Image (cartoon, rainbow, N blue to C red; front, top):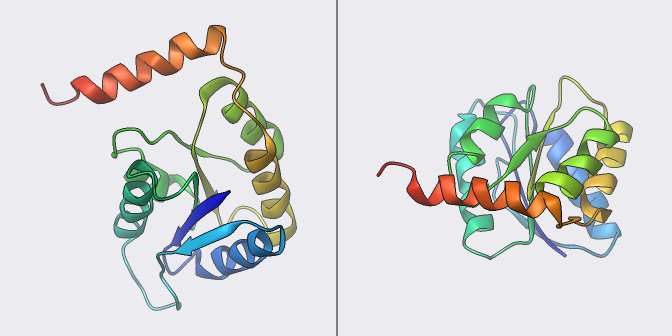
Length: 149
């Protein structure tokens, strides 16, 4: 699987940990930054990762800021991206099974590296169930397509 990673200054350390872990698991990665702890704006990195995902250049996105919330809002502004903030593996699993979420946001000030790895494992290894859930995902896609009209 090809995964795009992005983070602001608050999330760079956790992003780097997760990126390396994903590589150890055999995933191909794209790292759009940031690459140090100098203050940057999370919307830039959330949106850029989401654009890579929406363009089909990656299968999933993993993005990190202080809480996961701000960077997820930026990612969700891109049509075709369904980003979920998770602080435990169960939500990551259900977001894939029921919502076909394709982007995972984590808060570096909320979860530590071990828990973040468990959350990412759950997110990456769970498939979308389709069926009755497909109707709802199709509604989200339709909302994306009609936004601003």
